[in-house]
Length: 377
Ligand SMILES: Cc1ncc(COP(=O)(O)O)c(C=O)c1O
Image 1: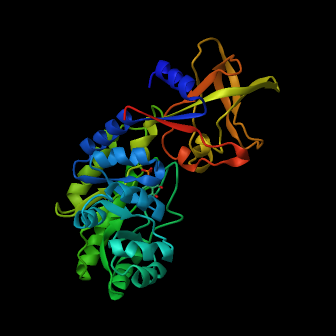
Image 2 (image 1 turned 60 degrees about the vertical axis):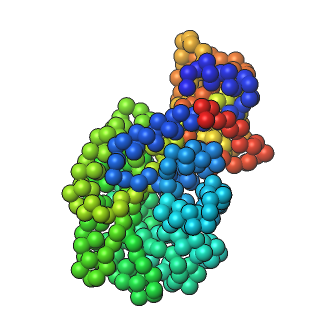
Image 3 (image 1 turned 180 degrees about the horizontal axis):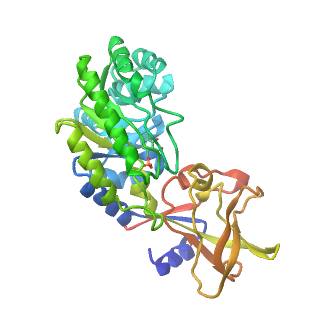
C-alpha cells in the first residue's frame, strides 16, 4: 500500500494498527494457482486465522489446512449454511486436519465429519482408530528442511523407512491411508528440499503399491517463500522444478495438494505503530513504539523473521534501535534500523508482516493486540 493511504488509515483508526489488504491476498492466491495448475490449494489457516482472510480465500475457491478444532470451526462457520450433503462433501474434499498429533477430544468431535487427518506414529493410529474411526488418513513423512527459515522436521514426520509399516498398521486397525504429506520447513528457498521430498514420496508410493496399498494423494505442504527481499527466488522458479518432478514421478490421477500459508498472506499485512518514547543510550537513538515483540512483531521470536521499520518522513538517517512498549528487554524489534530523527507521536511501519504475526500476538503487560483493519475487501 502507498504511504499516503497507510497514514490516512493510522490517523483514522489509531495505532497500533494491522492492515490487511485483500487485493494482495487475491493476487497471491491467483499467482500460486497460475504457477501450480495441478495443485489444489489448502490455505494454512494458522498463518493468519482472521475470519475475513479465511472468507476471502473461501470465495476464491480455496480449500483449507486446519490444525486445531478452533481453526476447523472457523472454516466450518463459512459452510454452516450449506445443505448437509454439500457441507459433508466440502469437509471431505476441501479440508485437511494437518496436525499429526490430535487431542482425543478433538478426534471425538471431528469423527462425525469423516475428516482427512494426518498422522505420523503408531500411538496416533490407536487414538484415531478409537476416537475417529471414520477419518481418512495421510501419513506425514519426515523430509529435509535444509536452509528453511523455520525447521519442522525435528517435531513431525515418520522416517521414510517406517512409512509402509505405518500404512499397514493403520489398515490393520480398520483405517484407510489415502496418501502422504510432508513439509519442507517454512520460508523454504532451497528447491532441493521439495525435489528430494518428491523423490522420497515417489519411492514410498511404489513400495506401498507392492505391499498392496494404493495411495491416491500427495500433500506437498507449505514452505513457499514470501518475497521478503531480493535474495528470495521468484515462485515461478521454484514452481518450474517442482511441477516438473510432480509430473515425472506421479501419475496424473494422483491428487496433489499444497498447504501454502506465508506465501499467500505475508505481503498482505502492514503494521503501523506510533513513537511513544525516545532516548539516547550509548550514543544510539532509541525509539519506543506502541507495538512490539509480544504483539504484531511476535514473528521475530516465533517465526525467526526479521522486519524492517520504515518512516513516513524523509531526511538524514542514523542507526537506531526500536523497542516495543512492554517492560521486557526481549521486546526489541531491532537494534539496527536506519531511520531519520523523528518526534513523539510520529508513525513507523513494517511491510510484509501478514504471516505468523498478529496470529501469535498476546496481551502481555496489559497491552492488547493491534487493531485490525481490512482494506480492498
Ligand atoms: C502442516 C503445515 N502446513 C502448512 C504450513 C504453512 O506453511 P508455510 O507458511 O510455510 O506455507 C505449516 C506451518 O507451520 C504447517 O505446519
